[in-house]
Image 1 (cartoon, rainbow, N blue to C red):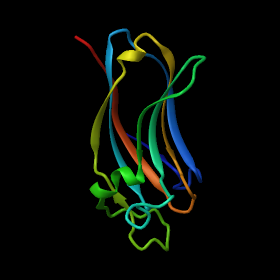
Image 2: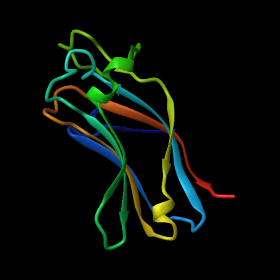
Image 3: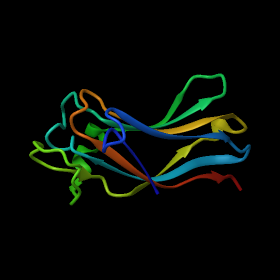
Length: 144
């Protein structure tokens, strides 16, 4: 399991993990499990504070392609409170999270392409309240 965040003592605005990757010629889907935790939920739903989680592929010599993206407003209606403290006073609601979700993204258009896979979080609008994404079970499904 990994964690990327917009703070938590690691950074103040973004966090990422990345790995070089040659997408197999018979790849069908990128599959990953994630849980989006944030102080931005509830108080800042519908505001300019739209911290986000992105999964990006950057082909060698090419431009980044966003494969998956979720912002605070995309998730506001499906979060629940969690007994986690990011150590940030002043937020009246505390930390909420999505719970672990498994996502499958079609990557057949990337078959045989080499590049870099990046999973990142970004502060949007401020760097006061933190967001973190827990990551697990990242893999590539192959076509039969």
